[in-house]
Amino acid sequence: MAIEPETISVRDGMFKPRVYRAGKGEPLLWLHGAGGMAQGFTPDLEALAERYEVIAPVHPGWDDTPGLEHLDDVHDMVVYYQDFCDAIGLTSFYLAGHSLGGMFAAELAAARPDMVRKLVLVAPVGLWMDETPVTDMFILLPQELPQYLVADPSNLPPALQELFRPPADADEMAERMYRQIANFAATGKFIWPIPDKGLKKRIHRIKAPTLILWGDGDRLVPPAYGELFHRLIPNSQLAVIPGAGHLLPLEKTEEYVREVTAFLG
Picture (spheres, rainbow, N blue to C red):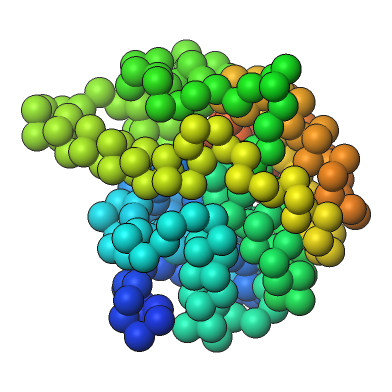
């Protein structure tokens, strides 16, 4: 499914995010992780768009999207996403987020429980346990990333083969490095030095029924955090996907989509 993003105006043009949008049905706002949306509308989103209207914006600061300078912390991001929803006329919706996007989604659901009907958190960050630390992604070398992001780097589906494909030439290598550095720099603004920015003090405010999804082979954000999120979010359920790592929507797309659609209805 070739979906081209549209650029919209938020807060009178202060922000001009690119937004991927496809499908019909109940609106599902999808918030991406640290890697951005460079791959576009991935197979997991395509599958969900068969049941829902999937709205997948690029966060300010990721993939050369302007506006990061106007955001200082996660609270600013939450207010930004309220303005984003106002800009596109979204008042009541399903909300889902992966990794960093899961943290943003949890914070938005806590701040505006009136807007979020159901919540899906896919291996989110945002909590911290000293005895089980989240891997510091900022110290990993590019060649080390696959072993932390996927459960089995030797057996990748096509979307992940493309993601981890060696660059064709020096220009492509430079472009990838620039994008990764820029996206990781944006990520650092919200989770450095550790991804605990006080969500634990607000998480009880989440009122929406919540599905928490984790891969049992996640080496970036250990599965123990799934239990912690489940324990702290009222009316939540946890599903652990065997043979999946941190990128479980692309590693185990069929199982992932089955869990999400069964939950959302």
